[in-house]
View 1 (spheres, rainbow over the protein chains, first blue to last red):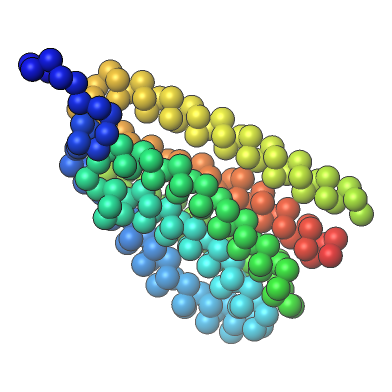
View 2 (spheres, rainbow over the protein chains, first blue to last red; view 1 turned 45 degrees about the vertical axis):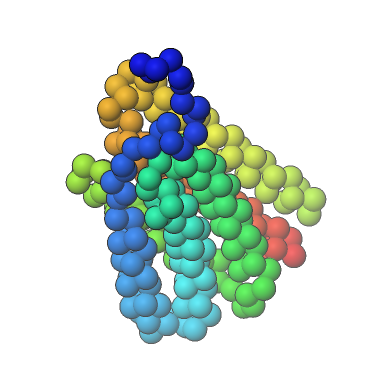
Length: 140
Length: 75
């Protein structure tokens, strides 16, 4: 720097305007797909499968929403450094929330349909993959 | 029956190992790219986070199957 002082690697020294991707749209799409899917599974199969499907979907949606809030949320928009700090908590939290969610579903939900749980999880994960790919293609 | 717990542990461990290697490679390339072209850092970081969110899914599915083995099959 011109005056010989160096800024520390704090927030003030690393302030960059980030354009956060609209990841909340992915969560809203997942919720919009979940409701009719729940009704279709209940209509085609039975109530147990529908509840298991919804539980599997919730195990996918909630940790992803947590991840998105911590990484791309309001407080992280102002600084690359704060976004990088939030990334560790986001990854760890997402993994722990998913593990706890699966444990709760399989430990407490009786009766449970495991294929329906994984189908719900897989469909919501597919939606997230497609949504992320669209965001990347849109230039985020 | 104990083999189920061993299988669940291996499933979670290897899944986590693979994801850790993948996220490590992603992070390394992010730092490399940001050092070469700092003006691209915000865009690279967004791409990194979107990609890392997808890499996480594989060990999470492994954890889900492991929880099924532990709580339903063995329980």
